[in-house]
Length: 407
Image (cartoon, rainbow, N blue to C red; front, side, top):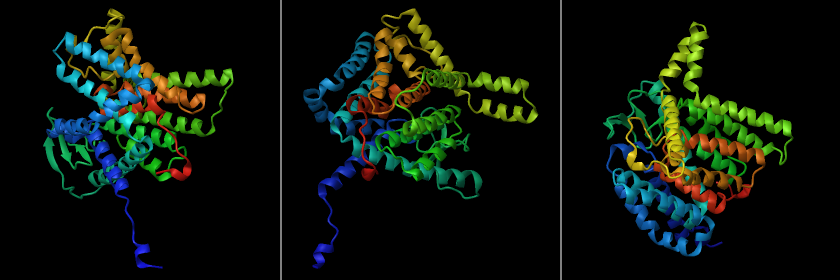
């Protein structure tokens, strides 16, 4: 055997593809809620890079693949473009969302879905594992992590490690690379779902890492959704194609209870404080003080539902929004309030994409509930990754691979 036959051969095209997908995903994550983007002025350069990478694929997708998901893309683009023309008050927000819609569409229709998802899961596994190690070093040892303390544009102070950042005032909540713990939990949940849907038999170690990292966020909403993820994985593997009426009713009742707990978390904790013993009360008070975002979430839902009822046909428009709380938190309801009945297209698109997946009925219903809860706990119109995920669902159902092809 010749020595040259033993040499490791590198395919230049494969190497370029790997670097391309790594770069695209890292940039997408940076502008999808990373802490460093809230601290350093890197959003515009990152968007410029994505624009250069996907401007030609965008026009190619319009020419060759538009029939698949064009109606949804056109609806979203029209909503925000008309808002921009009619009112300039929130033009920065509108332009940001339009950018996310256009580039998310181009990415979903031009990239190889399996390569993207494999690379995404590898990156999320690395960041999750690093966050777990750093979390325990930070909170349970005397090791001084070599992080600098910096303030975000909103005045929030972080210990900055780039791949892992922590809130100075709340070190015990795992943020990972993101600007707040709830978003870290969301990306761990996205990773769990993608691993289960795309690769059918998820890697057990990777699953354990995602669960651990999500639990360490101490996000009440995240932990509730994690329980639904367990149910999804079980139904995904063992659920029936057709269930009896009794099973369906019990299943729907359980889902309703979970949604109620998700939305009324603060009130439930207050009841525990009122009627529980002293030990339970102390734990409940701590949970309540550390999860005030749930009341903000509910306020956002009520706010946008009232807006929708006041103008169900056309909505109230972006220019009229002037609230102190994070007004775009409840994304599905925000679309209804802003654009009226046309805004329902956003939620319908997610449901349609999920219902097209090759899963049994129970799994698809649980997945719909998980996604709708996620959409209404964070401002997903502002997250690039969410738009890519939506268009990827609509375009190719996220795709599937055989066990032998798993990442």
